[in-house]
Length: 396
Image 1 (cartoon, helix red, strand yellow):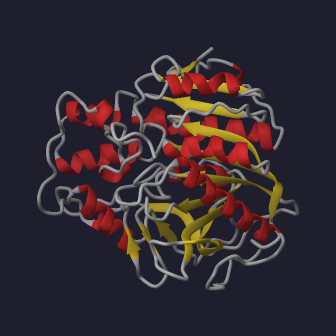
Image 2: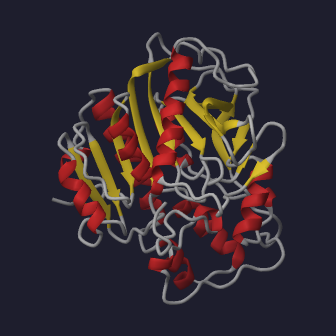
């Protein structure tokens, strides 16, 4: 767990983080006490469509790690997780699109954060539930995702569905007791501040998730309830081409997972604090998209950088804050209109990076990174500054 002074990745409205160390000078206005709707009626929040050639499918998995007892759940109980698999799909007609979060988790999320928006306004994704997988005769590269503290697995759906639309299988997971998560039997768990979890615990979840990826690749259904999987998902994953990305504490967990598990071949950290200090060398490709946790100001991040002995890159978008490389940059401006926030209040939440530009950055740079290191497709985006992305600085 990070120090008590660093509430890194803690949930705030729609997943937004406002850590104690980075509190704005002026506190944003309190949300209305009653659920808000746009003038003239409800206006559902939206996410941008992915840009890839494939429609996107998704399916939830209920997972049980029988190797890890769960003392919080009680004697004889084991670590229980909810995950989602996102993938390139075909024949999506008749398959409904998935909500950003399950309804029970979303309601708990809004209650906990105090953001008085009607849950019915929560966004839908581009993922069609249970749609058959588009394989085209070859195995699909895999990327796994780890969220920040007190958050949930939907936080980076923009990135997740973008990768899936370009032919990746992306597996996301709720880190139970540090996430808003809903299980198939209707149980809803929220972050438990009495059960602190560090990035090493997140990494343990991810290593189990990698076992589940191998199960799917081998034709085994890892779902503990043995629910039916989408047609074509079994045997579709390539267990030899796995990458990982994570936000905040999940970014640190990405590095720790790679240090402990050779199955992850490339890692991307979205403003990870790299705490506790990482002093072990990592010889595989690693990219950092930093904002407030940058090498100039954060000793732990600066200490981590020279231990990257393989391909490495550090970029930062001007005006980015801790949550800028995620769905918040899209959803908060929409919520701000409903709630009547001023432009100054909005910037206190999301920084000064233009939301439309932030979406393009989220879609382009992770895809270029994983394309290079999992598919050996070399473009020029990662070679240096691009006129298409003038906000993105390459840090030496």
